[in-house]
Image (cartoon, rainbow, N blue to C red):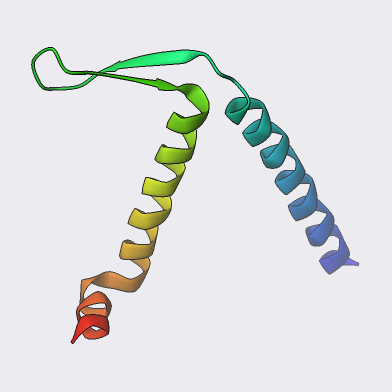
Length: 76
């Protein structure tokens, strides 16, 4: 019974995440980001920005999970 409850909670959280993700990625409003460099602006739609931040976060999480020693052993 406990496992069924956990599965239902995970499915509910994934459904909320999917709904929020679809809502944000369907938003076509342009967002202007001021970068740290002098007069360098990045104008992008909000959906692309969310997907970019998500992909960068997944990549950084992968690097943190594997570790630099594991990453070094993959390429040698």
